[in-house]
Length: 523
Image (cartoon, rainbow, N blue to C red; front, side):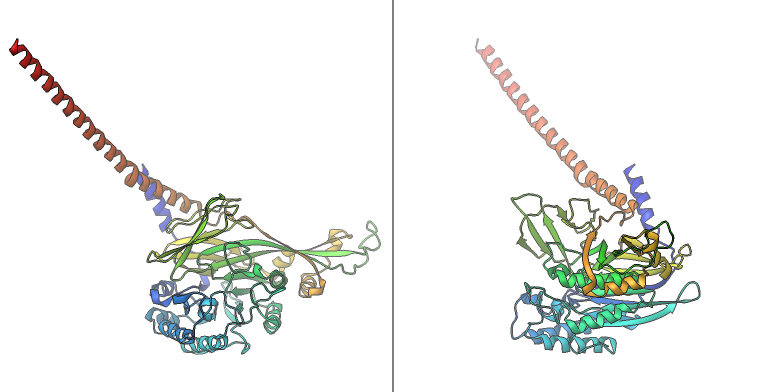
């Protein structure tokens, strides 16, 4: 029976999607070229149209994480050279029409590094040279960082044109020192550029990439945008303003796992002047209208092209640790403070995140193993836009371990979905404030009166059949390789003990009978 169930589940796993892919992004980060580049070959098999690298494409400091030595510039050049000569990497680049890349701390050359890094300028020039050699050109918008954007149009299923923009930030070159009051990741020059990029809402989709996570405020992770709350709020305001008028998805890397996060971002803007009431049933004027904006944000994290990290924490005051795991089983246990949740990853098994047990402030679905991600724009005739977005995480074993679908909405749908104004006026009057006007308000810091970010429990990311498949395989494996062998061992041990005891009893009986016969013969 169990074999039949396993067959059914594997059969379901083999049944893939027949959706038509309009455009495909391959996404990843955290690649140590010294561990080999076979993941690039697997990625190439999926024929991506746009390659997005979110940092740590090499590990210049892997021999001495966090240590800055005079040999570091030469190591940075050497690691870029190793990747540049990798045959799988070069074959992938030859087949991908479009690319976008930024760096993070390890290809920058300094773990959790910032703008005070003494080899900062060398890292900038080395990265640009690597990108130029790999891709033939590297267009950035300043000499003070590696942030960039690309606007690309492709044919749409309905015969029109689908236009998207990929915007990659540089959260390393101009990052303030950790602990800086009101610290920043980008610097004012990059903020001005980013504001302009996100104010252009003509594309059907904006893909915004950050080398570190935006929505997460996970206390286990050393570095994410919550490290500098004011900078994070400023970024979320820009993203939310853009999301009122076009589709926006966030991408990130850094944390050595795949993850999909979902958050609701709520803003209250400063009061604005109202118009006259629409009819006599309402008051003549409403003085204090305070528009409110709710925006759903989605973030796909993909980190672990060559290695991964598993975190083990237990809900107890006695013991808690993180374990850094490489494919060659070299591990480093790092003590951390106990926390009010339980988080467990396994090499081959992923699981749902249960509310109250996965994170203090967020629930998401995560996969911790070597992988890359795909963001597919897929034909969806039932949707008004004719398309939808699919997040897919592909393991090193070429298994789809996470699959989640998002709608790709039209501009009209977005205006109706995200905009609502509340205040002294009735809802139908307050709604006169357009999405465009609210977007303009959100982009002005002095107009922002409050932000509430609620990272939502995220259920249903993994298809139920896949979860059941893994549970059935686990049960079958436990039965075949643990329970049945254990029962067999116990049976043999029991039989051996029985025969030993039985033999001892027979020997003892024979001895008694022998003594009896001898005693009888003497008498």
